[in-house]
Picture 1 (cartoon, each protein chain N blue to C red):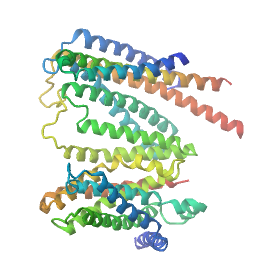
Picture 2 (picture 1 turned 90 degrees about the horizontal axis):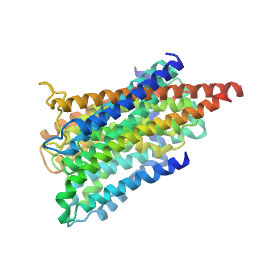
Picture 3 (picture 1 turned 180 degrees about the horizontal axis):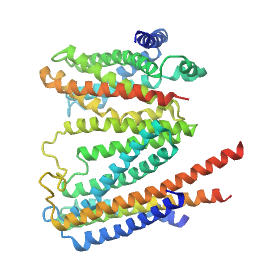
Length: 75
Length: 226
Length: 234
């Protein structure tokens, strides 16, 4: 489970960095037209990803806390 | 009724007398007002923007931050030596305690806000604008709303480990109407616009102040009960 | 509802909600057409609007139960408040990130002080204060009372904040899309898009209530642990 946590800590900033890089890349003159629509897709992807990640994050958080409390009650 | 008002007056008088003797808070807030204006002067690039253009906003932010300094200490004295217990055990109703504390805070903050305006006029060459009396009213209403919410949240934060650090987080979101209408009215008055243009703002400020006082008076008892 | 009942209902609703989310995602990507004017970024709408609605619903429940807690002093009301508040923070965060992501493409600006976004941001911080106050008091009972007060002040002043923020609009024509569904003439949204939006609204609400119930079950168990601990030391 620690590996999962580390993966999440690494994956999210990496995603943000990737997205920022695409954003900045779009500033280059020749790139404008092509990367304009690519940037839109990125944003949509990240938006949908954020929603799922936050919801699942809450689910996992509740599940973990429930497990801990049940262990305490079991004692 | 007169007994109730008498109790409030007693609390106001006690706090103001203490403040008059120690001059702790008023000196701190006053020094803050002047020094903040000095810092503002050096933070503004006069080739880009004139201080007069943003003066109203700066004035109100200075009042907000200075006000936080003063209001945060409202219950400091009572927190020491368990003096608060004594206040609560007395037959004075809790909302009277709140109103008393709030009014003494109001006097303090109003004096400081007048000082802030004077300092900004001096440092940035700003004029009093259309009507100093209406400006005084705007400042008074804003200060009233601020101290009402500030006193309530000061009681809350005094009961937590974080203390005064928590105060800005609690109070800033609900201070938005005061800043919007107060700075809006101040800006227009300082720019020389007619009073009729700020009447709407003054009405909203009054509504804000009224709501804040009512909410504070009603909820204070839940904060300080045992 | 008994403890077990709450948990099973919660789990059922949560699972339903998660499956529903998959459905909405598929519908959004494979079924509904792309908006002619805004292009692909408009699809964020199907996540952003339901998240906003759920966020406000959650914070509304939190404020209401907080008020009732101060009045009736029933622990269960406080438990409901903290669970709803947590949900509000989650869905509020989704709304506040998807909004600027959409705005950056559709209107070329991440943040333009649009009143609805500002209000959500403020509510989010008011409830951040709620949690901070709750967890930083020595006496947990005091913490619950303080938190309830914070929630109530926020709820009571939100209408005035809304008025002030709307009045302040300095941009004459606001970039935030005008309501397309709840209009007096009836929804003007394209049929397919309306379907996806309404499905998404239902899904998010179901998801929220499912997770709310599970969170509530957790809070009830925690209270039991504390009660036992108190008995043990007594």
